Figure (cartoon, rainbow, N blue to C red):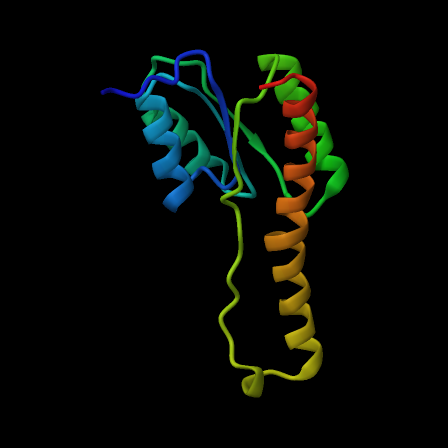
Length: 139
């Protein structure tokens, strides 16, 4: 049995490298329309976009998932361009490696806040919008 995601719209956060890039390439090879976000490296995003199988319609957006208004704006643009969202892969995340004993409290707190904002709040922002959209549209 071969999987076919023709006419399915997949949004992958952090899709320009690593696991997100592998997911983008996989879904593109299965005929999906792949939309992925990247935070800052436009060249890496373009390289990933160029590597995707051309069976579907693919696009990329710069997005800092920590910023709720930016998330809402990009999400609305995706829905405007693609009509609906079928699959969300919350891949974007950060890992700030340090030992608590090696940094002062303020630095530790900044690292903690960055991790929470990205790995929890960012995921929640997108999950809320996507699930609300999918439920309304019975996707």
